[in-house]
Structure formats: C-alpha cells, structure tokens
Length: 140
Image 1 (cartoon, helix red, strand yellow):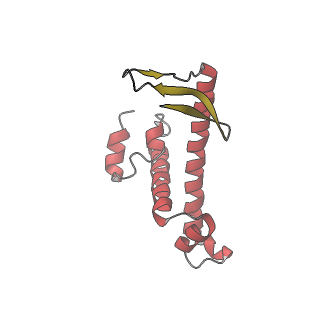
Image 2 (cartoon, one colour):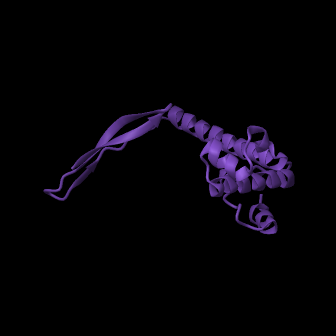
Image 3 (cartoon, rainbow, N blue to C red):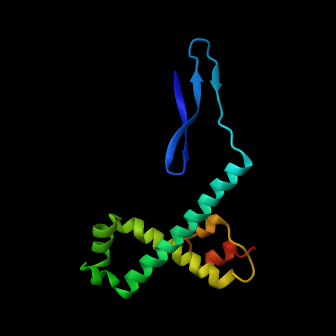
C-alpha cells in the first residue's frame, strides 16, 4: 500500500513525499518530509497571523452584535445575520465571541506584566469563570 504525503503551501496543496507499507514482510517504510528552519519560521508566522485574524474577527462580530449593525444589512437578528451573511452557525460564532472576550479580559488584566500563550489567546480557557481564568494564567 502506498500513499502520498501532502503539504500546504500558500493556498496550494503539494506532494512532499510518500509513505509505503509493505504488507508482505510486515515492514513499514515511511519517508518523512523535511522542514527547514526558514520554512518553520514561515509556518509559525502564518499561525500568528491566523490567531490575530481570529481575534479581530471576534471583535468585529462583537461590535456588530452589540451595536445591532446587522440591521443596516437588513437582517432581523444577529443569528440571521450570521447564517445569512457568513454561513456561520450560532455555536461557531459564540465560541469565537467567547474566545475574544477572554483575550480582551486577559489583555486588560495582564498585558503590562506578561506575555500570553497562543492557547490562552485562542480561547483555551474560555470555558472557565473569570476568576478561574485569572488564576490559571496568573502564574506569568
């Protein structure tokens, strides 16, 4: 059995090697793709931009919700706006909004004294009560 390994590069999927499984003798040969330090840095930069865009999207949605700006586009409710304009479920949007609220809270609380992990920035602690979040991350 053989299959190709794929990598994602600037919006395109490309093959980067293959993995082979020789069933007859029970051995497995796997060709691992390599990653240069430069490529690794580029991948991390992409993740950083994605996290920033994720937070900015949540902030924009929060403002649209809070100011009822969706009415300007003819939508009767925020949920109708989410579904009609963005094909986004209520659950997906509210998870995004919750993560953004956590980031805003953490920035206000800890920004002068510590740097946040990407886990915290992406809402890894969003389900916690505000006091628990502060204690969880307060060990900066």
